[in-house]
Length: 323
Image (tube, rainbow, N blue to C red):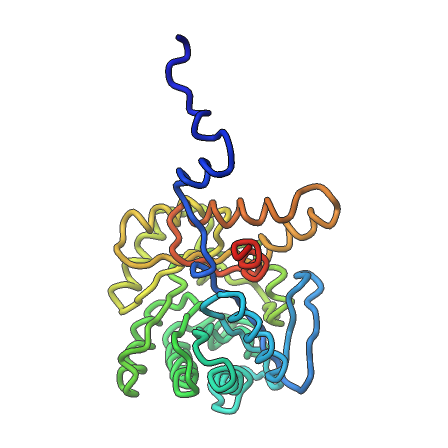
């Protein structure tokens, strides 16, 4: 009679495994990041992120149509401007790359949900996420610029804004600006627990946002801290965040789980550039099965508690899920 309990009975074939599966991933869970740049007919592959591109507005509209066609409901837009300066003025230019792309996508790809990253690092000549004084990023003067940037995105037609800068009080500043502008119905997805991670390296090539001096550890979170993340999330919720995000994802599954357990809001997780590129590089060397590792990674993020996953794998995952 031994063993009486046999868990393998429910693993015998794919049908029963699918029937009792605890965690399900859907294209509806995915958000695909896109990088819009200046010029026309530009599609420049990002060397450290194979399969990802900097694209001009005309090309990004075509890409957005492809994304929607795969059943992915939303994109996240990042901008690479023609002009950078000390205060990142291109970030809130109504005719900037992101603002122009928003209008074009909303016109040509109706029904695709457009989220915009709100930060200054892509737009400043120094590469930091805010106003610099005496070599330091100044918190409160930066809030005004972030609010202007977010408002300019929404005026162009963005469905949601996602502040990623990690300045204290930026969610409230953006919420007040949107509400004052008549956009009370626009949600904010806050990068609430964003860590000062080494996994962002490829993104900095993609967004051309490498700091010219120092690093971002004075405003992004220390990777050693777990309880602090709960404080950051609670503050952003109090300030008006509608969705809270953990970034990165793979090495912060415990934080995703904690946030899901402690707060009754949708939780997003960003499967960041370094996490993507590591898998791509290992697959290129023949060391891993890319499809299986990709899906296992995304399932682990969902299993940890993420309701939404921002990932450069979104298109590849959606193709598999749609089979």
